[in-house]
Image (cartoon, rainbow, N blue to C red; front, side):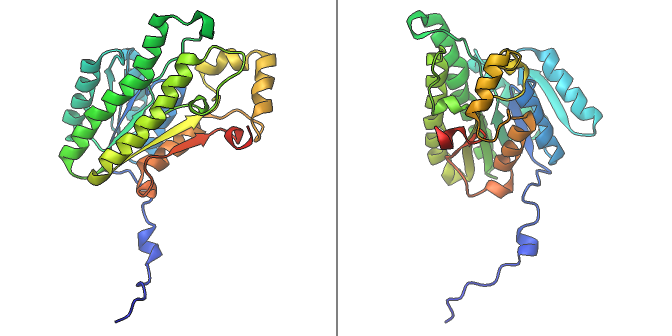
Length: 270
């Protein structure tokens, strides 16, 4: 009896590594700078894409632009402060297209307060939006994915602040929420693996978006940011979109419970 492994036909095996045709993707927070890029990346790869957030008009605008470009898309309202709204939004996406394959959670916020000034109200809100919302969006999505019986992928957006503190700034709530999300990802990956569902995270540094405007329009803080990044530039939204498509696609089917620090080398050198 031969124990030689049969030769793999890579011409067939490597076809469609980034093909999302026939897949349904839900991107909560998908009209922010990063979220919109991810929605477009998933759509270009072939997925049907639903986008949501507190501002329904902005979600509808992204969906309309996607449809105008020939993609299937849906925009809807969803408030990450409300667990029932999160659950209802997942139900609506699954009802629209007969199931859910991919969740890319782009919901997040920051309320910067120095340690000695942190208020209970602000701390609770940041953990609600950054951590609790991730928990219950993931739960609702997992129920649909398990029901569909085809596996799936879940991806959460974090930050390098999941691993690194920040001197001179008030990041207690934000950093602790993102650090908690790392462990949520690992736990969900462990629980969902038997169902063929992968769970991963993307942790960028500063990205060229409206949210980063206050960093980048100030010459002093802009220079400080660049000095910390070995690659010598700030990330673009498409840098993050590429990672999201990878984690959503068959190319990453054996990757789960991981966080990709998309940071230009910061965490490799600090």
